[in-house]
Amino acid sequence: AGLALVLALTANAADKPATPPAPVVVKTAADVLKRWVDAMGGEAAIRQNKTRLTKGSLEIPALSVNVTLTMLAKAPNKRVAIIEIPGVGEMKTICDGESAWRTNPQTGGLDEVRGEELVQEKLEADYWLLIELEKRFPKMELKPVQKVEGKDCHVVEASRGSGAPERFYFDIQTGLMVRRDAEAITPLGKLETETVFEDYREVSGVKVAHLVRRVRPEQTGFVFKTTEMKFNADLDDARFRKP
Image (cartoon, rainbow, N blue to C red; front, side, top):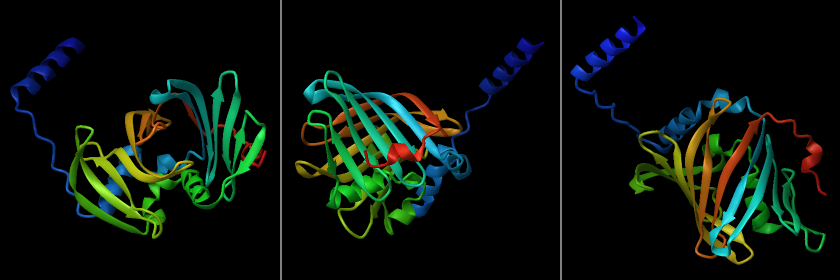
């Protein structure tokens, strides 16, 4: 009986013309950002996760480098990135919400991050950044639709009032973020970067990109593939303090 019902439903569906999806109507940048939060799983589902542990492989194709990257994040503004380099050791970038440091496994030294680099690290450590973009970027403007990574995307240009504006691209069909364009502060100076988000998967009720590609005009572009992600991991505050 169960099989007969499935066949009957399939036959009925085949007899009827497919109903085209309702057109997506957005009028403002705020509309696009609301769709983005909903597409991820909704604000309530996102906010119930206060920590995040992410592990994966970090590949820098131009340098033939493939290492392990572990990222620890804790609301509202703590973050640690640990790169394990075979034969060398661990390189860490630590942000406690106010200050940031980098460790050098070759010298055993510790460098404090300052100036614009610190501003950048604090922004990346902002746990709620992606659901509070309007608060972090006071000026937002909806730009014309643009095709990115083969997808028609809503484009939101955002400015913090200082520094270069950023652009966020959201798939019109799914509402998910496809790319983020920003100015990165690097040892080589300020460089325009494009970060592409792919392979969204649901983790604890939240859709998260498991493949991240960053494109830069020099040799530090990378591909990060997530192999493990866990929300509400037990992360003590001590892990985010100055070494």
